[in-house]
Amino acid sequence: MQQRMVDAEGTYVYGTKPVWTDEEVHIEDSRIFKAINWYSYKYDRSNVKNILIEYFQEFEDEKYITQIKSYDENKIRSSVAWICDMILSGLVLVDPKSIFLDKIEDLKKNPRKFIKEVETLKVEKKETRKISPMSRVRRVFSKIICELDNEIDDFMINGYQTNFSVKKYSKTIKPIYGKMISQHYQSLLTELQSVVDREDIELVESYSYMKRSELRRFVKFIKEIVDIFGQVKNKRTKKKATKRKRVAKEKIKPKKPKKQADIQLKTVSITDFM
Image (cartoon, rainbow, N blue to C red; front, side, top):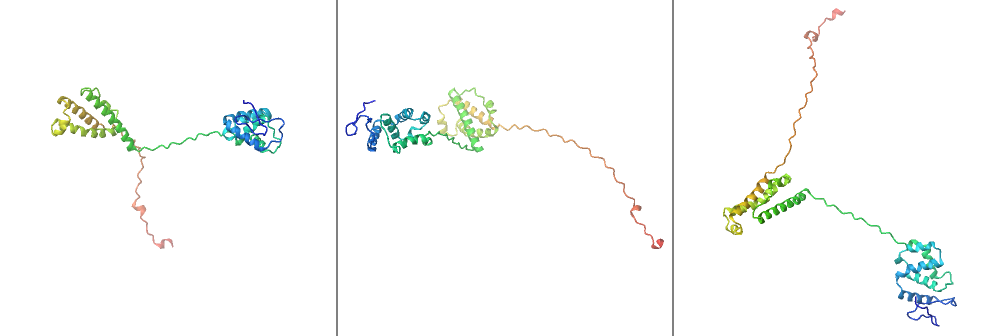
């Protein structure tokens, strides 16, 4: 720590730390504000908490030390720490209602103002976009086409030969994609067939890098893809029709028809009852 020096007029020499002699009792606020300016110029916020802890160890109850340690440095006014350091250096504040003492009391009585705020991590809810069935079908279809295109490229690189089994691969594909794949490669097959038949001169020239035998093998490979995937069908297992058991009907005895004689009423003359 630098040597403490004060001149006769009570002003501070530039570059030296303000000091307070024992003879000084009534010190004007203007001198304290000048001292605060010196601290603000020479010190930074990294010294604030250390000075406050040293002050409270010397003059206050130890229970406040843990309180000060939990404070956020950015919430504490640095001028309060500078005043505490002045008191440690010999400054005596006689007036109990001093504004400088009030700032120190505020640290003791209002911990909520200075305590660190616990940052709560906000979990952002990601909106899950619903994929339509058709877009899902297109996505899977494009993936299958990409795999088949790679096999076609390998077929051409390896001298128009391959160990790839189209039939075996087709069994791993859902029937919904079979017709789509067949239609996709049908245009290529038509183009290659026209080259073999020499129907279009421009197309023949574009495939001139292939030998006649290589072209035929290429046509055969594409035709196999078109035919096999075009035959992929849904394998629906037919359920056996369950026979319903006939419930035997209870035998109902036929009712005997009433005789005609019982039905007809006999006419009797009134004189018989007289």
